[in-house]
Image 1 (cartoon, rainbow, N blue to C red):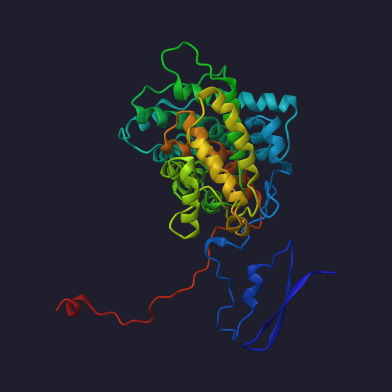
Image 2: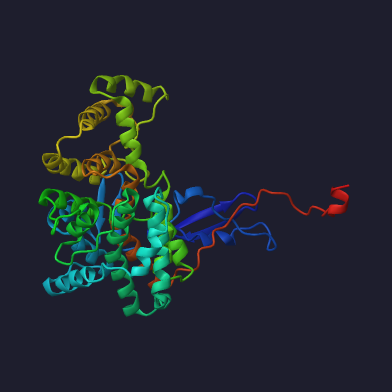
Length: 429
């Protein structure tokens, strides 16, 4: 039996039967509902796309009520525990886990594309000393499209593959150079003997030593953070990549749009806001008063609640566990005690339980980044590097999706109509 939705237009008394597929109706089917053939049909009004599906995707599954996150069907908990970031990257891009031969080839490709053209280095050195790392990253990724003009041929599958490899490989290099630029330090070139995460840490922190080797526990923690941030369904930045990509532009330009969206404080800057909140609380003794202030509307509880998750964010649980390894190396961040007490009270308080305000991925990630000596302005760069994999997987899926068209949302016009133009001679008289 075909599922359908019967809609009655009370203006005309007509009934319309709309097919239901995968729990959705096609917005275009609503256009048939009209009072007159000369009038436009019904459209939906959904600011922020809170209940509108813009695509079909087989990449990431989220069940916000149950706190489930899966990449290509694999639970995030298993991937974070037992896989490497490049293994997860292969999974997201290719749709399956690699065998040994495919994995070795993939790692080799990524490793040997980490270097960037020397002109990119000159380009980045042209930024002011105080340029924000995300602004530098956004501009330099967009500039890569001029170095690889063949990237415009997006329907060539082999060409698409090499562009995705280049982007995944070069993002840590560009991110690390943006970090060094802000510190006035010389840029460090990639080391092909190191893993993806090790190489990134080396380009960030290497000084005069011949060979930089990060502590294995820090490398593992960074790998976990990269895996957790690799994709997250149709969020703001992914939507930006898909929207810009729908014009059939090259992947560098589409990904730079994702970086621009992530640059915004409502998307990529949440973990920095958590640190500011914890510092403002000051000590464990002040947590109870701060909670009271949140209930009274005088304070905001940062790092709790999520647009999708109405349960404990599964990524937050994994990151909370990873903090132990990081702090074993760096020493415990004094803000951790405040965070733990804040979480404990909030999870037990009926006010927050009723509103389903659980810790999200940003609640603990900022503590780890700070322990790794990253300034707050680098937090979103650390987000963008792994999310590039998800953006590219979504972009590639978009290119192959025959249902997709260039993005062109409807609007509800609220301005004036049919005004008579008054020439400037009369307006200025």
